[in-house]
Amino acid sequence: MKILIVSCSLHPESRSRRLAGELESIWRATGRAEISTLDLRDLELPACDGTSAYGHPDTVKLQGIFKDTDAVVLAVPIYNYDINAAAKNAIELAGRQLTGKVAGFLCSAGGERSYMSVMAVANSLMLDFRTVILPRFVYAGKSDVSDSGELSNEIRERVTQFGEEFLTLAQALQSA
Ligand SMILES: Cc1cc2nc3c(=O)[nH]c(=O)nc-3n(C[C@H](O)[C@H](O)[C@H](O)COP(=O)(O)O)c2cc1C
Image (cartoon, rainbow, N blue to C red; front, side):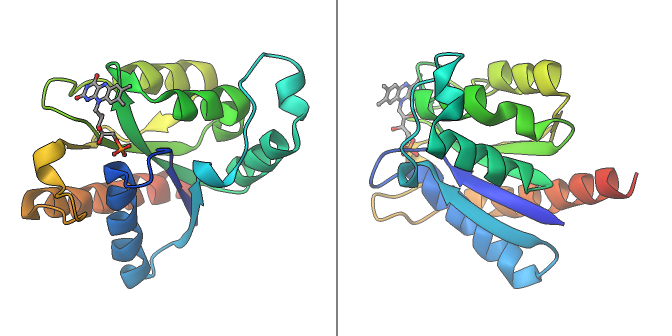
């Protein structure tokens, strides 16, 4: 089974990218799935305009990457009680390629009060594309990831638990 981990932050010292890195290391150690990664900073995606942006070479590339995976983890920053615009834009451009696949979220926020901020995009993926959302996500506040990128023990455990449950759901859906 192919799983893609997408780091959606454009920040050079992103905390959500650290969560993505932790999950990647855990999964690579188990060897239970074929893992690939994507950093949105490596694409120059146009802002979605609902028309010509779909033909942009990097949009086509993103669509191909999404199409080629069985399941996707989105590591996202929380901006204004939502996922950041770069992540939302990627979904506007290529979300259709996630139809029927499993998706899950690792998110990083400044505080503790934006806890349910991924639910709007989770609903949208479910209703637009029948994406199957893992009913567990990792939410890390500032105190969970140090300035040097060290994760707290609690967040490490949560990422581990997320990884287990994501694989269980994705493998169950694949064999259904
Ligand atoms: C424009 C902007 C909006 C933000 N909005 C929120 C917010 O609504 N709630 C919150 O807890 N943190 C908010 N933050 C803080 C970020 O979520 C935090 O810095 C997080 O670490 C960003 O993820 P990243 O490090 O992966 O880029 C915001 C930050 C920015 C720059």
